[in-house]
Image (cartoon, rainbow, N blue to C red):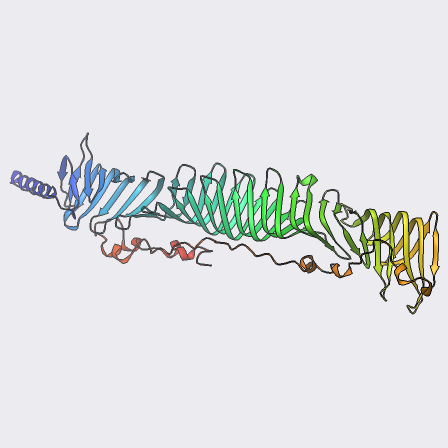
Length: 563
């Protein structure tokens, strides 16, 4: 009786095995040296076993699987693979794991235990992996590591789109490269090009720089990137912000476009404009388009505007240079020149090329003007007008008080002009008025030297020295054409009274239109209703596992879904 049952059982297994070999494109095909059944443990299934030389071989619509043991439920077209599992999809995808199962109807595969999936461009390692052949997508949510030729990428949630060779990493994304580390909550990575797209708060940290953005692109192989939306670069002692930033690590170069703010954290200065280039090796910044350099002080900052600004030199010897259309503004002091040079560490500012300076009511001109500040106190110390020095102010009734000489040296007290010395070949013409502002005389003299004393921006005392000649003329004895010293050029209408006057009369440059980076494509959930419907009753999975959890969804990642 026992032999009869064994014969019947053997005949059934053989019949099933022969039936399995019948070619059917929709059915899973299995080949194995040994087959058996175990109705107690695997009811309704055929068990396939390997021998010492060959593993069990499974084939379905171009996907091939090898394993030590396979449990095949032919009626539901479902198979479990156990031990040393290898799965191949052509020459594009290879996967190894300890366990796998595959539904031939839904074409959904599940692998667990040291899962390793390889494509020609990258390798993925994770503990559990879902693979949808119909969608050509793989998915994990228990942490995974991807390695390509340049970087290692880790995240809690990941999805691979095989057609596009794209990974979508969500939650605690870390990209590690020998030169930098990227941290993000949402990063799309293309394994064939090494291109990474970051969404939401993201950082790229290297040895000498740190990039922050909430939307950005980075070429992990060329080591360069483009960043928009709240972007900034910390570059040694500088912080660069702008509407759009470009960064090239290999060239140690960064550029920015529109609404740029570059902060020098060591020298406490700021540069603003609409186009900038930063060269780390040269320790220089080039800024144009409404460029302004600001030396930040507690109560009274200094503003320098020019068509082009350049900041060069190490922090111990930093130089600010401005070219073309230079304008300077500080409380109670403003000026213009063709160019300007300011050395932050010495506090010396040189105005060169038709310089003009307004201090209080006084206008000063000369071939060049030097302004010296005290580096420690950040207060004005002195000024020096070289050659053809000319100081003029307009009195309350329209008369011009004029003084000229070869050079002018002034000294400040508490940021206010206190004493001015005019030296060599001094000429002056000063209107003398009584208490009710009536003109009672015009003082016109020459001398070797003259000293002016100021109070609240007004001259309160002037004294001539060395070979003084001239007199005070009654007003009717000095004709109008004799009331002007050679070189007088009153430009009071150009004086700057506010920060806004730095750009007065200048056209507003047109900002560059930023192409930006589009938001990530809204992908459908990896799991859909059909996955749950076609879940085999013999699967290790449960229905609630074939659903996208709320905490794993893209819309929960901060910073995405915004323009």
